[in-house]
Image 1: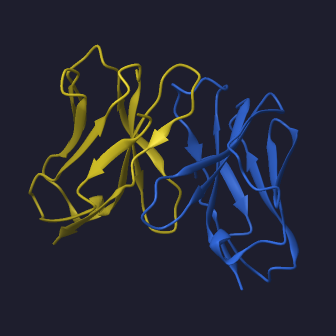
Image 2 (image 1 turned 180 degrees about the horizontal axis):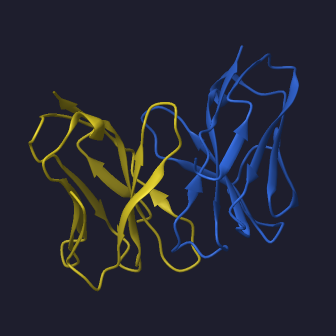
Length: 111
Length: 114
């Protein structure tokens, strides 16, 4: 019940395409859903986060869609660029409990 | 620059060696974390310190020993490690111990156990 299931494991998209990464959770008490981006040789960095009281959040080319009833949330990258090639992690947490991370999606944007 | 600096970046050690990983944060945060990152596995939280006190230890083997002398510094002391301990060790910090806050990660120490 504490897991966050992330898919796909890897993704290759042509430049300008819209990669979509999906995550699903079981624990309905989760109330904070961040996405982290990690480049090779670097630590993860917070990209965007959402709380369950909204269904969508946009920051630049990155959008989180949240479906509370389905217990799913996803990351969309509009007009993707080769510089977006990285590993993306979804996560979930509640209150003072530890953050639970997904296994990550390795995204490659072809030039 | 993330404001969290980890040293060394790479470490190769034998199973009988003793070494330490260092983390320093320049963000004025009160909580610091150690994570283990292995290929094809989720990030594993190892230890959490809030205001220099350990608040969580996720059943980590005793061959890993954390130390937090002040709110800016965090160490991970290593001794008699096993080959399966080879991984990227990440340090992170956040404003306080509340988990619904952004965590700022360092770039990690790549540890290889011979």
